[in-house]
Amino acid sequence: MSTIHREVRWEDGGVSSRAERLLSGPRGRRLCLELAMAADPAVCTAAFALGYQLDPGQGLSRVLVTFESDQDSSESGDEPAPTVAGLVSAVAALGATRVEPGLIQTPLQRSVDFARYWQEPDGEDRLAALPEVAAALLPLAAAVVESAEAAWWSHAFSTDQWLVQWQTSGGETIPQTPTSLTAWSEEPERPKRVRNANVHAIRTPT
Image 1 (cartoon, rainbow, N blue to C red):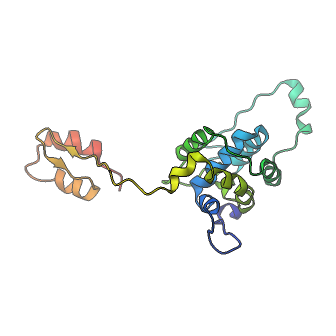
Image 2 (tube, helix red, strand yellow):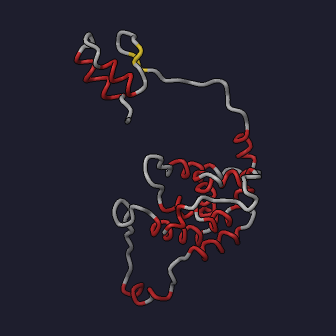
Image 3 (cartoon, rainbow, N blue to C red):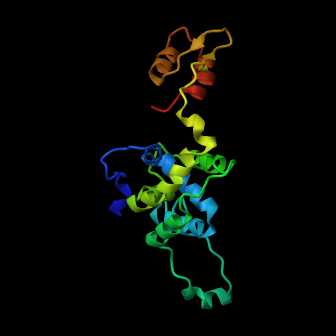
């Protein structure tokens, strides 16, 4: 499904508003999708099913398990499978509903929790990246950026920053990058027990 890899492009050729800027990135889109899912059970059901279909780990790292009775089996044909068009309609029906205080935190947390920078995006991220879905989320995105909870997102970064540094028991600062860590661990005078105990515990992937 090549459509899931298309980037969202707005008609004016650029990101001209805070809502469009929010939807221009995967985490912003996922935030709005999660918010829509929380607002409407029908959206939640459709997004879950469609997300599973689009997930690169479908049937492998992500398995859908369902349970049904004999009665459910006989009536299984009565309920059509969710479609992207149906999801878009359900999301559009939400409109620009005002985002009440306290509603953004959980969707925001879920958006961050499902970020996978080291591998392909999951099915829901791919679903939210479909142009028609992202366009349907625009009114909701506008409500998000206008909410009091999101006001601080546009504030300047604090100049108070923190850096965690590792030190040996003797007070020596351990380098932070993989290259410098390797050089540090291979120094002739470095005790073997320090090389084995500390370096491998903090070495970062290359």
